[in-house]
Image (cartoon, rainbow, N blue to C red; front, side, top):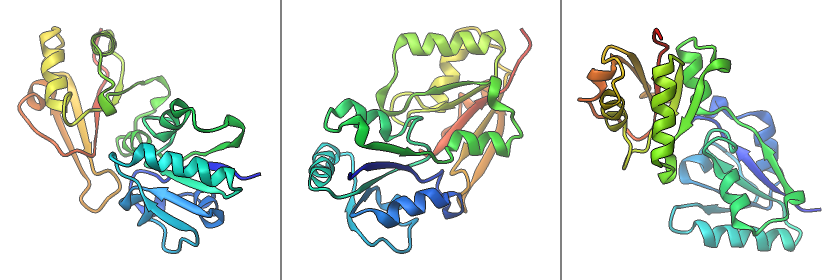
Length: 220
């Protein structure tokens, strides 16, 4: 039976692509992914389709049709498909039988950032504000978690809720301006950069689109 493999391809560096991910791509008749995700694989035997925000729905339909034609499809998802990745998008599309979906997990930018900073993230609170997933409820949950003194690892939105916006929001909520903050940009890539600052410092800075924001534990 043909399957849709939703393949996590890691945070950006080819070294972080797992052997399981490479096997899934190798066996696929159709490989779909962003240009930078496809570039992580030297040899792709199947047909390649470059995924963009504009062709997302049409491409998912193409994938569904390929599976009906008994072709294996690999859909490349940056980081891990289950955290701000393509798994949610695929499930919400209603185009696929869940019995035909297999997730190949990958290393997320959140994991890589936690590793860089030696953070044991099993007790951290994770947030994603990607793809416009920003509500007042989500913002208030973030504010409460920070005020409670928990480590926060989050993915900002570079259009509507940037690190600068997040810091400004938390300062207005009365969070300590000296709260330690780390911004991990382009994690694992050649231009990787980790900035250590405070909440008030980040409120006056701008950062690149590929970043993870870490708010360190503070006293209650």
